[in-house]
Image (cartoon, rainbow, N blue to C red; front, side, top):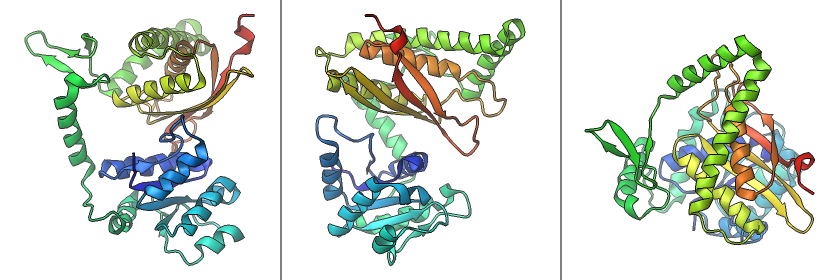
Length: 345
């Protein structure tokens, strides 16, 4: 599917790139960003070339991390050679290396500092509109209303329904996909409820034991949910592409029901037995930034349970970026590794 805007970024700037995509797509502009939009059935480089060829404009997330990225430099080289409109979005004041100075030295840019980066999104939007063939941007809330209306009309034919049916005489909501009851909570209500349980366990058994209990509760929940997904999805072959498709569909499902924006990038080699990857959850609903209680261990366990059940192998998630440790970060990022110590021989 052709996307209007291609997002080029270095891996350390992934959270900022995701935030830009969220804003632009909220305005009705379709974006290509790797690895989210990469077709696992085609070579990675071909995906990028096709996306650049067919987009209207490119946004380059620029920071000092860009200087160290050969991958981004290759993209910029292609973008310039194809004479595609390029808008550098500078996150900070830094000195470009000679390679980037050659390509970007005279390019008009958007300076997204010293205020919060989000305050400059509207300027980026204004810069993109002239390249979008008469496109008129909409406010994010207007786009969401249209999406909800479309989803509600298409729900009977959809196999990923997230619009619940309210039965007023019973005071309950039913998911028409599986006819199961669902409950809606404010996130702060849920966090306070889980935090109270966490505190009670800490008083009895200590914080380490409380984290272990929350992790196991999440793990069991993830296994249970993945079993339902496996029963609905027809992936008869155990191939790298089937594993990747399962994981991608899971991320799309949980993103659609408000858990946060899930994205996953995995590498599977059946011949060598190698498996690794990275899972990112932007704005995870269960992160307690206010009281800093480690109830998010539930989500870590949940993700391990889901991934293990979908790929039929035991994994370990290692947290490499945590919003609890850095107030300016919004994504929980996990490294995914096989738990070889627990494999059956």
